[in-house]
Amino acid sequence: MTEILILGAGPAGAAVALGLKRLGYGVRVVSEWRRFAAVEGVSQRVLDGLRQAGLKRALACAAAPSPRRVQWNGDGQSINQECLLDRPQFDAAIREDLRDAGIEVVEARVLRVESTGDGHLIHLDQGEPLRAGFLVEARGRSAPLAGGRLRGPETLSLLNQWQEQPGQPGSAVESLADGWAWMARLADGRCYWQITQDAGGLPPKEQLADYCAQRRGESALVRELFGEAALQPASLHARSSTAILFHEASGPNWLRVGDAAMAVDPLSGNGIFQSLSSALQAPAVIITLLQRPERAELARRFHQRRVEHLFLRFARTGRDFYALEQRWPEQPFWRDRRTWPDAEPMHAAADFSQLRVERAPVIHGDGIEEAEVVVTADQPLGIWHLQGIELAPIVRALQRGELTQALAALPEQPRRMVQGWLLAQGYR
Ligand code: FAD
Image (cartoon, rainbow, N blue to C red; front, side, top):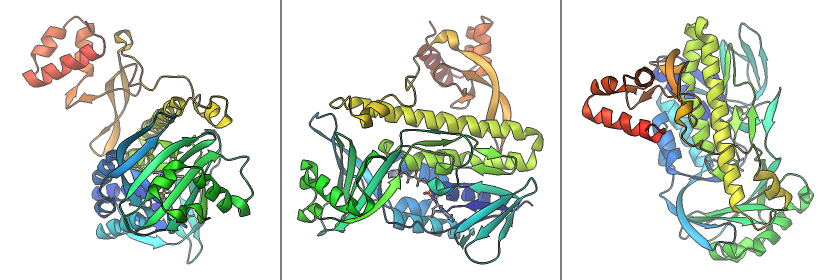
């Protein structure tokens, strides 16, 4: 059996490893530890994704939802909720999930990968090089970048951390004239403040901690959430947060998943969700590449189209959120982001005239195959099933003028659901 090696034990690499293992494939993961501590805020969608991936211990790391204050466009304060995730704890729990599933994790830094049509030789910072017939690149934003890419405005996030007294957990986000800041306080008193700005034009590295302390001093929200310690320079880590789409998400014997395939702007708060989305579909793609070479092109097209589609969806979500901030329209930070990546709407309006049946790659069982799907203005990749009902035969019947008969063949509940769907598409 082909040896499958996964580079990177983040949520994406782990989701692929667990998915392949469930399908009976032997996999190994190679990863080093993340080099900095961070806290991230996650939504219910992320928690659902972790559950679906079988990352139980990682899921258990998410703190109970805590209040998040939002101050955007000077519209006063609104409050919603998010779950805070301590990344070092989360990353350790991911490895426990892998070990529980009997998946070996080699702790090493990957220095270089030599690839040929026959396989890959992976050079590590310790021990012998590893060989693999199939490689999954899941090293997140650290994965090597080569070839053409689609990049958003160059963006940098400066994460600051300090310690205060234990207290009520909570987080907040606020827009600033030249960027935005996210901040969080954990129940044990660990405090985080992260400012995201244009990558160019920041002070030199040695002045960044003072610069961040000064910026915190200007924020009323910082004073509400933290104590006096927030006004002092703190430990600092800079991370690129530029949105990046890697143009090629697969080759005949490799696949990119998670941030290594597409990394989104952290504003969406959906990074972990998007990394899981591309990873959850990966086992079916990999199995097809390994077992059904005649369908390799189909499987790669499936992965590529979904990665690109996801990327654009998240990029447009970010764009629309940036556009809500209207106080500084001429500031380069806001001007560049409220128009990127394009002017296409987030969701295309229903247009019945665009409804058509096409053949497209879909996941069926453990692999990718081609099926008839219904393409709509808002679902360019096509819909195969609507809660178990194949849509293409219904649309074909409608085009032949035989909709009544096709609907009559369905039990009452699915029939109502399909009728509702057709109405939502503009069918009258
Ligand atoms: P990662 O989680 O990055 O995992 C990659 C793994 O590969 C790591 O274990 C790493 O140590 C390992 N690795 C890297 N290089 C090597 C190497 N050479 N050799 C061996 N191992 C290696 N998402 C949210 O959902 N909510 C947030 O609030 C949020 N905030 C963010 C803030 C910032 C500033 C940024 C940049 C991102 C944020 N994200 C957030 C996004 C989230 O961190 C990522 O989308 C997610 O972790 C991607 O998962 P992944 O598995 O693809 O990669």
